[in-house]
Picture 1: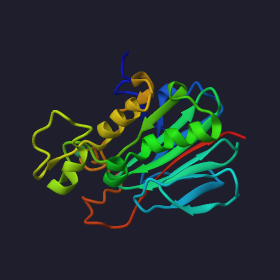
Picture 2: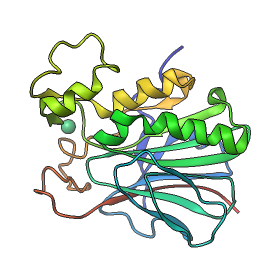
Picture 3: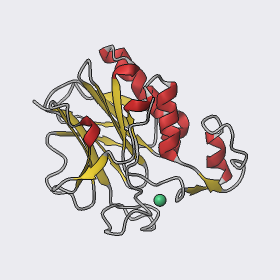
Picture 4: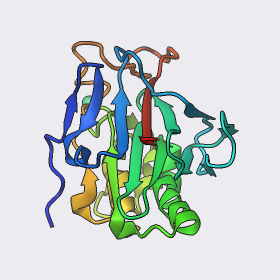
Length: 230
Ligand SMILES: [Zn+2]
């Protein structure tokens, strides 16, 4: 099977990155906001207090819900799940068969602890989703060339990069690829995982992204959101 490819992400007139592979799903609203986005995210948007955990919350139960965690799932139309990121990886999912959705904030801790697999499990538990029916878009975040980490962080990724012998020292980690491998291991077909979003650090000539590392930790964040149109 072929990967979904490198040209699936494009920026629309609202300065929101869209995924062309997923546009045939008319019921789906899905986009990755930039620093320049206007009128984004759609409202009402569910927002999390993000803590770099693997906590996945269900947003169906309360309007204006604001919980603590790093992933959201829902199947309620007209409600948008959002996550905020700067260099961490935003990941949006949808189940084509059950019309369920998820939004994930995956920094290195979330990626090391397997938050995407937890989210696939949560979709299965709540909506009887099957991994083979999911589509997943891995959005703009720091790339594998830019993301330099120390040995303590790098060593947490040995299971996902078993061939690498440099994870016991300062090196680089590709968080998008780590998440892609976790999704495949969880049963999501490779051809349904959309990759190739720009790097928030090195593909940032127009300063369209907030970058935690480039800005020295200033607090701006991009908003990524997914919803079922009402
Ligand atoms: Zn980069």
